[in-house]
Amino acid sequence: MNPSLLASIALCALTVSLLATPLARAEFPDPLPKAILLWPSGAPGSESRQHEPEHREGDNITNVHAPSITPFLPDADQATGTAVIICPGGGHAKLCLGHEGYSLGEWMRDHGIAAFVLKYRLSKEPDSPYTLEDHAMADARRAIRTVRSRAAEWHLNPERIGIIGFSAGGELAAYSAMESDLGKVDSLDPVERASCRPDFQGLIYPGKSSTFSAKAGMPPVFIACGYGDRPDISEGMASVYLQYKAAGVKAELHIFANAKHGFGYRKSAASTSAASRWPDRFYEWLVDSQLLDDKSQTTPKE
Image (spheres, rainbow, N blue to C red):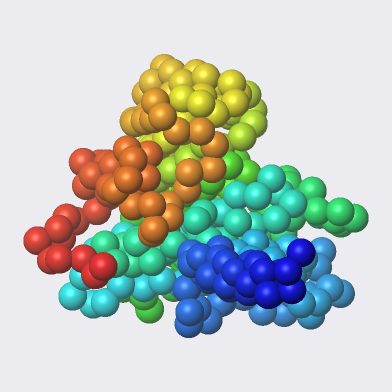
């Protein structure tokens, strides 16, 4: 082959590669707000590994040993006092922090909702010492306690603190609503004195729907998934909705006819499909549920 032609092909390939790289990371904000450690002295069960660096590939993170929340706080003139902990998915083997974490954090912030993106420990990462029940759930509950314990500092309503999760993170959100406590009043740790009960829950195509249960008094729930998702989600979440209905728990269900698994929230895909606009439906649900004071007259940041 002509050497000049080979050089042209190589140059084109390099150009395509360089152009593709930023697009692959477009959901990762820069600069990123500083994360807040949930246990500054080391998470129980992770003390000996908390100084190991996280591993990043694109917008995905692994090797989490120091669980944290990354805050996205609205400007004072837009703040509604409502807050949400965001749990990214990733099959408990990684955290998809782009389209299931930071992008939604920015959207929430720009719509007056304080958002805290959770990095939790991964129970299915190769050679992981962690379990979902003992470690990932401890991180989710600690995140809720942390935000509630600092509500005054962040100008939040302590009775409007919820949790939302995608896929594996949706399991954490559902379980946190299924089992919680009002805090340990005699604890020396002020965070542990705060309740870990979420005031609302958002379940976005969560797995393990067969393990979910509902009972009277649980926080209201917003559910979104795709018709084309696997049966335990596309059919299972309809069954979960009926469980909430039977228990008298207020629930709203959206099954998007043209969506599959993992649609998340991508800034670049906003308004291109009904599923991509699910955060608008979530916002409306919060307002309808009297969990959010509508400030829509204030134009959100783009």
